Length: 281
Image 1 (cartoon, rainbow, N blue to C red):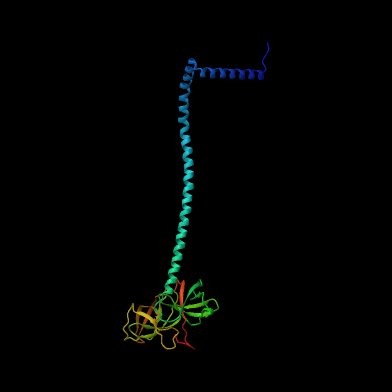
Image 2 (cartoon, one colour):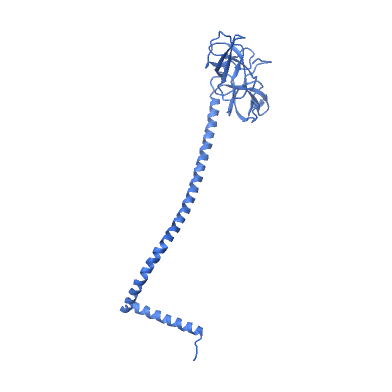
């Protein structure tokens, strides 16, 4: 008994399948009725299986689609966050620029100095050491600055030039301890000497205000401008924040709160005004 070689068997099977396929295609093309019935029967069996397959694979497909959509949503959220951060950064920069411009315009438009020549300067350095009571500005001898010139803001007096170089100067602030300043209480006419007491502290007047002088909290205080003073008259200094009576000296001691913010200086105005020789406060 002869046994077919496996390769010959596969070849024979393939030839039979090809012949069967050609026959079925020919019959289908000719509209062979029994074949149509067989196709319908096969469909009736296969279609439910396909529907079952869809019902099984549909949750998986939906889950995959949801995962893909979630990934896209995360990317979109990240993009929107980046855009929001950029907008916030632009807004902060615009606000900073607006604040700088406003501070500069305030100095340019000072109107209480009268006819004195002035020059606006930018604060370029402020020592972080709380024991230091000075700032550095971007104006110097080449801009006409001289030691002792008064320095103000649109609010009022902040100090005077203490050191001058070619391109910069140092300004001594009036809250420096023992900083001497000749003042006058508006309305009362009394002239006295005020001194700084440190950062965040009011100026103090220990003598010069007699007990008969009618003064009260809230009264404005300006520079005295007496002969030989380091400051022209009537520069705004502050307001009286406290009044005490010294029963031994029979005088009133007053506290003066500066109207200029000495802790947040960005631009200042130097008054090009000096006195010859030694001067009094």
